[in-house]
Structures are given as structure tokens and as C-alpha cells.
Length: 444
Ligand SMILES: [Zn+2]
Image 1: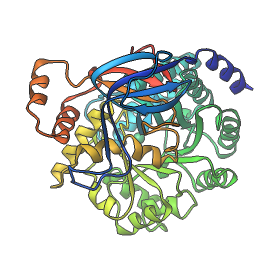
Image 2: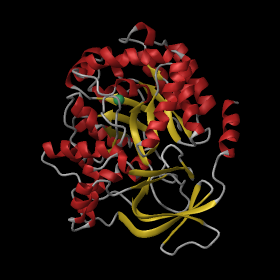
Image 3: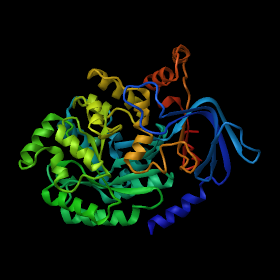
Image 4: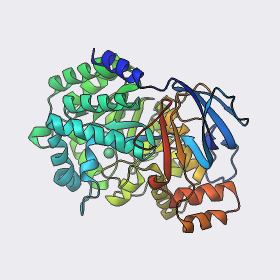
């Protein structure tokens, strides 16, 4: 019922005119080869027009549109699909840049107290609004996000995304042990809350539900079994969690699940690993784990700024890729230090450099556009600038200060230019964000 009312409200504010946007269009037709700066999967369409009718892209063309199309001319600016964050925590804006802790201490000292405050309806509502607007202001138009353990806070998050017409996949966090008592749920109460949330929000507009066990140590066998049952009952649900982020955490999982072959094995042997599973991190995996991920078609959400900030480890992207595992790049705020995915891609480049590898701008940007859309089974809707797709679009300045402008002027190829922009740019270069055909007012 809630959903139906919101849809009507949201439609009344949707753009219903035809309009066209001009700029330099960059997106991908497939996954660029590793470490190749010349890639046939890069689609570069300079000085093109994107025609938008209602909430969809109607056409992409070099010729200016006719007089019945309102024109927005972005000149030389860079136009890309809206960015997609495959792992982020809505309540954790409150703990960004918290000093001096590795994962387990960070959770207990900063994160759990912050998440406990979302028990308060006003705090949860304001937090949800702040988070959704912050995503848009950083160029992210779609996300797979953790809420908190609270049903009402999860409702608030869905509602905030829906009001913006935004593609959001989220779910109530499941955790019934090893967390402070005020954050613990119980199996049957959690199951009922999940089923109510799924009924209210899954498939409502652009929203979808993700079954969200925080990570293996905070759920009992019974709760993991309940999560698997939810997935069996509705195969269109997503599953999000964490895996093998930090060595102490991996050791703890070994003690808690002594019969399990590995941390990943806890999920795979309990029916939690499938094509719609997205697991954050996956730094400390072995060949067998990677092979199970590949066989399931599951995704790793590499979270480089978080891994560097918490000192969790260096994710070997190339190794995962060679094993056929799908990899996206995510912010993991608040372990990560920025919601802006360009900042996280710069961190990803540095992580790979420490491993003796080089990440191209193409592999990087693909992992937060088409690659992320494919990981979420949404590539018919988002991640591309193509007729028929929903018009989720970002427009970026190349530079705003003379030093960056000077640096870009010295580049000799498209890859050099985009790479320097990616390494040196951030959300301050963002000029416009379009969500489902509507220019987001906070950005314009
Ligand atoms: Zn996380």
C-alpha cells in the first residue's frame, strides 16, 4: 500500500517533456581486457546528443535534435552513465574517517553505536534522506546498500530512494549474536520483518530487496538457514554480505565454523551463494573459493579505500579476474573514505600498483558502470548510454582548476586523458546528475 501511494507522488514530479543533452559520451559495450589501454569495448562518442523522453533514453545521435526537443548543451563536458555503488552502508556517514582501528575494533567502537541510534525514527529518517542525497551529489545513481538491523530505518531508506526515483537495493541487516544487545535481532522476528519489507518494497518502482546477513560471525546457523529460505522462496531477491576482509576476522570465522572449509564456504554450503550474491572484499580467499564464486556467478565488491583505511589487505583483482570472478568497485562507506567512486577507483589503482599490476581507466570505470549493472542483473536498465535504458546520467567537468586543465592539455591519447581525470578528479567536477530522466535538483 505504501508503495502505491509513493509511486503516484513520484510520477507527478517526473519530467514529462522531451529534452536532449549534448556532450562527450563515454560508456562500454563489454568488459575491457586487463591492462589494455586500447580497447574495442570502450564506446567514445564525442560531441553527441542524448535524447531523453520521460524516464528513458530515446536515442543517441551526432546530429542536433529537432525544435521540439529542449536542448541542454554541455559542450566539451564528459557524459557517463550514473555510477553504481555495489557496497555501501547507509548509516555509516556518521562514522566516516574514524581514527585508529582495524575492522573488529572499528565495528565495536564506532559503527555499532552509530547504527544503534537508527532505532530512533527521526534519526533514521534524517539519516536516510542525507544518505540518498549524498549518493547523488557524488555521482552515484544506483546502489546496493546496507541499512541497519531496524525495520523502520529500512522503510525510511527505501522511501527516501523512491522519492528520488532512484534504483536502490537494500535490506534490513540480520545479526543475532556477537553484537551489542540493542542491535541483536532474533530469527523469527527478523524473518517476519524481512517478509514484511519484501512485500512492501521488493519490485516497487526501482527498488529491490537484498537479504543482508552482516557477516558470518554475527549470525547463528539458524539465522543463516532462515536467510537461505528467503532466497529459495523468491529467487529474484539479492544477497549481500561481507567475506574475508581481514585476517583476524578470517581466523574468527574458522573458530566459529570449524566444519567449514573456508569463510566463503560458510555461505556456499548454506545456499547463500548465487548469481545475485554480492560479497564485499574477498581479500583473503583461495583458489577453491574463487572457483566457487565463479561457478555461482556471484560478485566481489572490491572496496579499496576501505581496505587501505582499515589496513585490511590488498585485493588481487587480476587473480580474481583470471579465475572468472565478477569484480566491481565499491565505496564501503564508512570504512571507505569517500562516497565518490572516482576516489575509490584511484585507490583501486594504488592497491593494484602495490601488487605490481596496473589498472586501466577502462577496467576501473567499467567496474562502476556496465560491470556493476551486469553484476546486479540490471544491464538492460542502467550502466549504458543507449536507447531504451533508463536515463541515469552523470555530467562531469574535465577540470576546474588551471593545474588539472594544464595536465589534461598535455595528454596524448583518450586513455591518458580519462586516466588523469579519474586519478585527479572527484565529485567537485560533477556538473549534473539525471535520475530516471529528471535532473536531480541538489546538483543542478
Ligand atoms: Zn561493508
